[in-house]
Figure 1 (cartoon, rainbow, N blue to C red):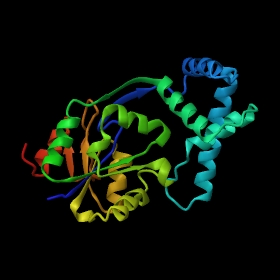
Figure 2 (figure 1 turned 30 degrees about the vertical axis):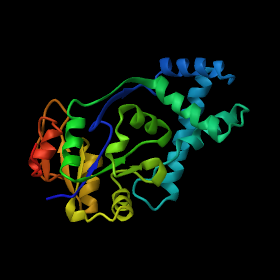
Figure 3 (figure 1 turned 60 degrees about the horizontal axis):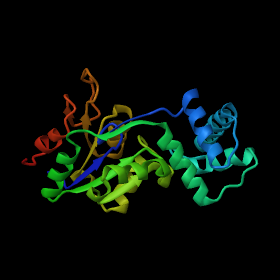
Figure 4 (figure 1 turned 90 degrees about the vertical axis):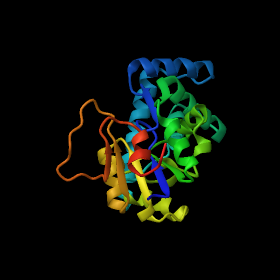
Length: 243
């Protein structure tokens, strides 16, 4: 039925937990920064980072015609370090961002049925795409670590595109770039207000992976399919792919 399977990443293919806003995390990051030669008192870094990130998001929302614009976190880091007297290169910025994410990581793992689902689609000759609300400097290292990159025929990360789900513009970019027929495409994700609502607005069928302990049926569902038990293998079964 479908030729193109578009996946969300976090909460759908990857099970992840991070701690990017606690005092404990910022203390760890400030300690790591000192070892790299950047002296920050952790509370100052916290105030700068959170306020500058917020300013960037507010400015993007004010100045963009998009429903849900996205920022690039590298620009936030450059401003944070400039405020403390440091001019950082592109290579340093990439390293600082990647380390920020790694230090915040509590756990990262694939869901047990992720590879079976992707391999089943590949074996059936389907095209697989990734549509992720994420920062490239945070996410690419995690795609490499989990070995997922080779499964995708196309990868779109919101920080690269300047917009994010549920903005239909993000879905349209994917379809236009890879010449996808929306009628032959389905979006698979675990977020109703992001993945499913955006897909519906873009005219793409949705497959909701319910990762919540309890499933609540919507009066007017934004999705066409649902796995009540949160199984990616049902993507194969419900869309007519033999296992």
